[in-house]
Amino acid sequence: MDKVVQVRDKRFRVSITADELNEAVTKVAQRINEDYAGKKPMFIVVLNGAFMFASDLLKKIELPCTMSCVKLSSYEGMCTTGKVREMIGISGDLEGKDVIIIEDIVDTGTTMHGLLPKLRAKGVASVEICSLLHKPEALLFDDAKPKYIALNIPNDFIIGYGLDYDGEARNLPEIYTLMKE
Ligand code: IMP
Ligand code: MG
Image (cartoon, rainbow, N blue to C red):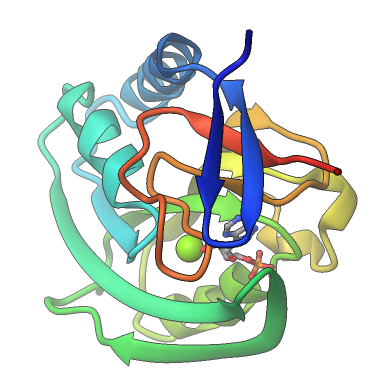
């Protein structure tokens, strides 16, 4: 029997196991290690959702690198609000840096579409998106398509491994999908 969890008023069924996540994160880290050989990338972690992915990914990065966190939000409850708010700014100089954004999921792309110009305005040498998950069917902005994607998923609401439902379930080590009752 698949694992089912109840979070607030909703039930979710496990859809990506911890082992599958680990394998997918390892593959993405290997690609970054190869593509950025000889460089010193700066990782920008999008809080809160990407904290668990970033922690696991960065342990597999074998390059000299720096990291900084940014807090943005375009989501409330279970649908995107369409607005991007910057809450905690990026510390440190971005001029000439090869930036890799670490995101939990690119859904409509609103968040990344809003963040990319802000980073480019700071004079970065390059900027790419590395997202744990991507919902290709939901994407509205072409520039928000991540170069590095650990796993593509269908257009369903999911939780776990950093992703929340109204603030809960970020601690779950697997990804769970909303059950259609
Ligand atoms: P976007 O701006 O529509 O691409 O949405 C991006 C943000 O919404 C992500 O960084 C997540 O924090 C959140 N999000 C998108 N889809 C889901 C989901 O299925 N579950 C939980 N959070 C999500
Ligand atoms: Mg997020």
